[in-house]
Length: 427
Image (tube, rainbow, N blue to C red; front, top):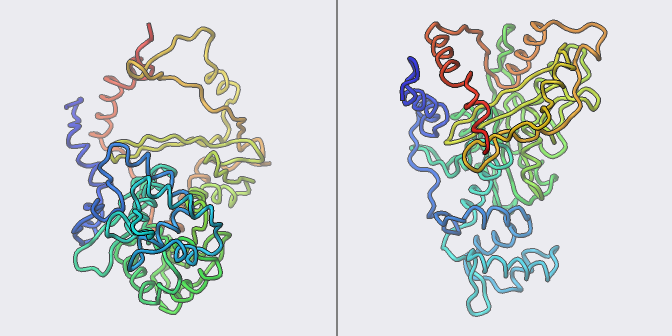
């Protein structure tokens, strides 16, 4: 389709290159051999209801643990052997999980013993689940089981979140099954991909055991070139920095994580590390902000100063946000108040286009500081914070004339039209 001077097929191809897993590695001089092989899963992912059936049950750490024990076993396990593998779980809980896993055709029972329905380990299924968490809970694009030519091991999960590439190594076994070579290979894959953040996720071990893995990483005595934008280059060794639920290696953005309950909450905490950069930037200017992980916004006291929204479809993500510095809040409230007897508009023949927004009290930065920083000062602080976190340099640019003409054509043909903005009025 041609819109003005814009060929939407070309634009779609360009967007695909930004988020396509093969393109991501091609830009790094590597070739993807395979990814997301459904034959490696414990279930048939081609079923129309596969996601709805299997994604929710893996939220349970007990369910993951029991299924993992059976799937990773060299042979069929008796009920007593399963109970010995999970001594802290109640017998009734184990029985319930086994019954549910058999119903879902993840496990089968033969001669009073249990074995997986497919002769595959639990690892790829856990990778599928972690990727699903990234997609569903974190609104990210994610790929699992990415195998790269001429490289030891694979990239368990690669995700793209707000133009940041992340890498998650997924382990779902005992600490005794992880050795120094596993950590060394993880750090080597991290070096090759050069993501904005990487996570070594171990399902079910204690935080004390996690310290052992961090020790393995520090033993590598790796040194990284670290740039402080606009200041200097320096070579530094890895150090460990503790957080509540994970440990970060400095200066690279590697996180060693133990997932003993809600995986999504831990990943959100790591996401907060990045999205919180804007909050950190504002704090550097003396603005008393905090990041709210529940509503994914920044607040001063309990009042909201940012708003974000996003769109994710067909492997393309679009996100935008606002920051209230010194806005006319009375006009804002008036603009957001629907007039009485407002007609109902439909996105298509069934879905309502204009839904009630989530209500929240807002405020301006200027109302909470003695002297409000300028817009340029705020921009500079945000850029510096993002650069330090992402290890990338932000370059200022300008729209080309072609881009300006395309934007104007889109505005005239689409974004200025009430049919596009509101939808079709319901009869």
